[in-house]
Length: 419
Image 1 (spheres, rainbow, N blue to C red):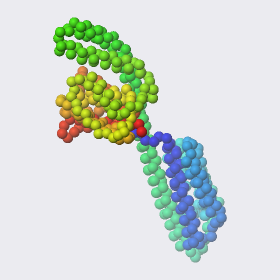
Image 2 (image 1 turned 60 degrees about the vertical axis):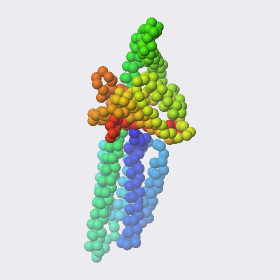
Image 3 (image 1 turned 135 degrees about the vertical axis):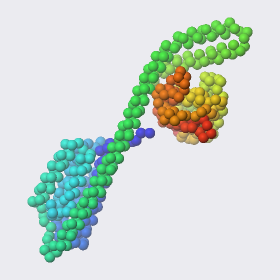
Image 4 (image 1 turned 45 degrees about the vertical axis):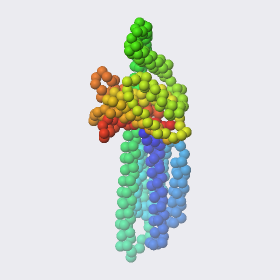
């Protein structure tokens, strides 16, 4: 199944920026508390606390905005980063300017902009951060300085530089890793979307060809029906011949009905030709139809169910898909096919087990591809499993093929039921 595509990469990045800002606010509060209670440096407390309070208010508004379904634009994300730069510049202005060891934190918004925004925004952010750094070289409120404590102050400055480097390294690494993960997830989603689009194109092409073939096959089938009826009337004394002719006429009738339904339902949507049916009745109708198509195939059917019986969407595509899987098992089987079904209130589980030679390594890898068939040339077109898998997945189900230890292969079908 595909990943959730409703949340854009910029929305996820804004969530990460909200988290980073929350961490920064907590770190700023701890730093101010450390300075106030332990280092006892006199700084413009009112201005600095006001900046932290405004940044907290902005983060609260960002949290509220994240719970709205508005799309996040590049300019909005850039403005969020710009506010962080201005807040950092204000804090640095009141705490030593370029002499503050945390001046290197300017690299964080620049790195985030480079990783998430187009190059134009990145260069604007680079110009702004360079300009702010340059202004803080000449304009700032200096920190109090005691010459007698010069060594202690220098040690604090070096420790602050180390802490700023550690914070910058950890945050940049975390954000880049998350960005790389988002890019990989997006690439996987795009690859799956392209795969589904390609498969839909193949299905449309097959549908077009099938409609044309159905139209062309109508005349020879009508001719065959007339000829078999005349043969049945002519050889009334031969009971075995009559039985064979009856089987042949039933097969011709079934082919004509299938072609008629194909042409009549072409272009209809899933909702237009779907109805509800108890799941046991749905399976019974499929098996009855299959016995008519393949009267020579021997099979056993076991059902483990619950009461009351839930309902499933009675859809011709679903029925045809299961019939294709049954036919594949019949072609691979040598004696008998074992069919098992069980369901709960949510899902139908169907197993089709044959006693054939099993799946080859190539068949295991390429099963479900269009026009791939493991049968001998002329006995299969390689579209039965492809269409069955595509249709069942469209209805929220899945198909899985694997070999059994005791020999043979098993086809597992899972289909959602109507609650």
